[in-house]
Length: 516
Image 1 (cartoon, rainbow, N blue to C red):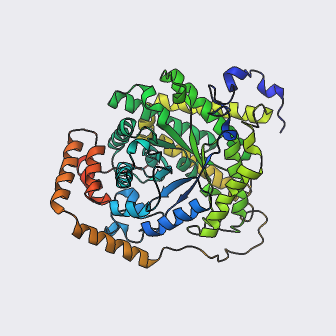
Image 2: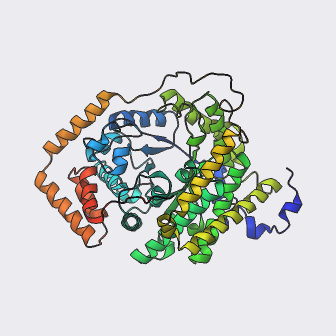
């Protein structure tokens, strides 16, 4: 394949590119990009108990990480306490177990929240974990007004791709809007939502689907905030952020990020009449693709991650997590996590790539791929609008069916070897999967978590707990913003499960319909 000027016949620099930091932000959201400031190196971490995860965070910070990213276990994500029957076997496995404010206090012990930014990958229970983070900051003497970080808070993609939802979409979106409204007034430096394409891509979507479905969700959130909270778009849109995947198709991924910025800038300007240029900036975190990691010859994953990380940097990411090579086998060890972080640091400090803003800008290939992806993304956005928007596309299964078809096609291509995966279907030299030293959550850690939760429940004031949970229930019934009542609950050491159950009693639980 060859690209030439013929592939860019209608190319207009000012309309399609502009300089970095200028609308439509194809070349990046800041004029100097990384020569002014490097991306945030934010390794996603958390496992077992808060004590264990606190040690991992300190380890990463000591080795040069520049931001924290918290992984929560499935019970915490689903609004269950560690002692709930459904939590058995899952406590601390995919992230850190957080039951009460005490866990959050331990998680950030000796980590000054006024000097570090924190991203929390949490959705259905986002309001609870954010409230706990605010309460920890207060105990450290840090004003919420100076807290910086992100709460994922994107529950729509849970119905599409991931499944860690609790309440029906309307109720979940109402809570999302409550968080955005509360933070706009009380946490001015906080990114109120991270609208996520990462999990959509992990479920099997194509590059164009990943961006299109993410932007469709973003449009739904913006509309919901304007309609429910009555906010002007420029009063909250500058704090919206995004989260994308980075796969192995190196040049396509670079073009994807550029196309995403351009599409979002035009949506905000044309659809929502945004006047503040910051509202048109698509700022995003990137994680390298977990679904591309292989259990066979796992050392190969370090090379895949390096290429994906470089693509994210060339694509202009603001924040980056690099996967560890052993994540297809288990939770990453300290050594593999350090290597993943070193991958970013070598790109940042040894490659010279960050010294140039958008170094691939003007490439016939990259610009042509960017235009092609923009067209595909816009076609999907038009289709979703015809359906009636993201909510209808979720309810009628449009997103889910499209992703399933793409995932099926990809798997067929791997099995037919039209797509080659080194060490899996090509150049296979090892039989089976070798044993590697992996990290495992100790049963003692789970027992420790359960004991700690039992003690907290005995120590706290049960009358105050009943009162604050009742206040939360009334706020939900009366369609009020639930952030302040949730803050009152966590300050009294109400559990994640108790708060979630109170809201379940008002909003109900969502059950997915069969797609086929």
